[in-house]
Length: 343
Ligand SMILES: Nc1ncnc2c1ncn2[C@@H]1O[C@H](COP(=O)(O)OP(=O)(O)O)[C@@H](O)[C@H]1O
Ligand code: SF4
Ligand SMILES: [Mg+2]
Figure 1 (tube, rainbow, N blue to C red):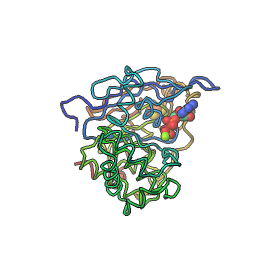
Figure 2 (cartoon, rainbow, N blue to C red):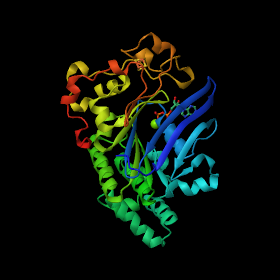
Figure 3 (spheres, rainbow, N blue to C red):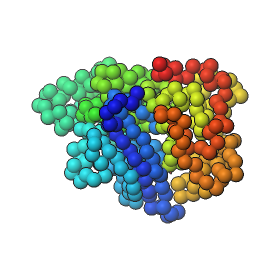
Figure 4 (cartoon, rainbow, N blue to C red):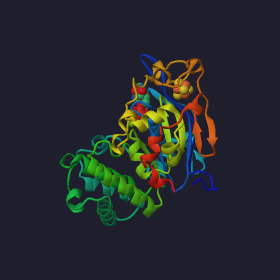
C-alpha cells in the first residue's frame, strides 16, 4: 500500500547517541523507514532496542546527554532537524502527536483530566473553552470511556491504568495530528482493555484516516492493527515488510524468534520458545552482526561483518547474511497469524 505520492514521514539514516559513563551509545543507528498517509507502521523489538529513542527523535525530544547525530526526518516534506525549537513546538501536536509509554508520568497529577484535555483542545483547535470542553468529553466517549463527564473531573491517580491510557490517547487525538505515535499503548493494561484499545485504534484509523506509528514489543499486537512492520534489534531495523511478509515469510532469525514467542497464537510447543540471551547494551555491541551471539543461523562471517539490508521484494527488506537459509516453520502458516491484514 504505497501510493505514488511521497511518504508523510520519511526517516533516513537516523542515528541518535547518548554520552554515558561507559562510552558513547548509539541507541538508534542508521535507521531508515517511511510511512505513507493513512498507513499504520509497527516498530517491534524487545526492550532496549531503540524504539522509544526513535520516536523521541522524531518528536525532537532527545535531551542531553543524548543528541541526534545524523540522518534526516522528513515530515510533510520538511526536514524536522532543520527546524528551530519554536517551529518544532508547532509541529508537535499539530502535525505529529505522541502518546508516551508511561501514562502516569505523561499526565500532570495536579490537574484534572478535563483541565488537561480541554487545554490541549483549546490550544490546537482554537475554539472557545466550552467548545473545547465539549470536544474533550466527546473524545473521551470515543475512546470508550462510559462516563466521560465523571472522568473529566477526575485526577489521574483516581483512574485505573486502562482509563489513564485511554485518556492519554484521547489527548493525542484531540489535537488531531496528521501522524500519531503510540509508544507501547497496551503494555500497562490488562488483556481485555488491550483488545478494546486495539479496536479503538482500528476505528480511529477508519474514521479519521489517521496515520499511525505504533511501537510495541509484542508482535501479536501488530497483527491486529498494522499494515507494515519494522523489526528493530539493537539499534537497527533488521527486517521490514508488510504484515503478510512478516507473519508468513519472515526471513530474519530475530523475527522468527519474536514470532515463536507469541503465546496467544497456540503455536506448537516445539516452536513456542523464547530467544535465548539478552539484547546487548549499545555501549557494548559485538563486532559483525549484533544478533550473532543469540542466533542459530550464525556463520563465521556474521561475527566479523555487519549485515547490510537486502531487498527481497520491493516491500520486504532484510539485514541478514543468511536470510536465504531462514525458512519459517510450516506451523507458522497454519497458525493464521496476521491473516486479517493480508488481503
Ligand atoms: N537518557 C539516556 N541515557 C543513556 N542511554 C539511554 C537513554 N535513553 C535511552 N538510552 C538507551 O538507549 C537504548 C534504547 O532505549 P529505548 O529506545 O528506550 O528502548 P526501547 O524503547 O526499545 O525499549 C537503551 O539501551 C537505553 O539504555
Ligand atoms: S547475519 Fe548472521 S548472526 Fe545475524 S541474524 Fe543473520 S545469520 Fe544470524
Ligand atoms: Mg520504549
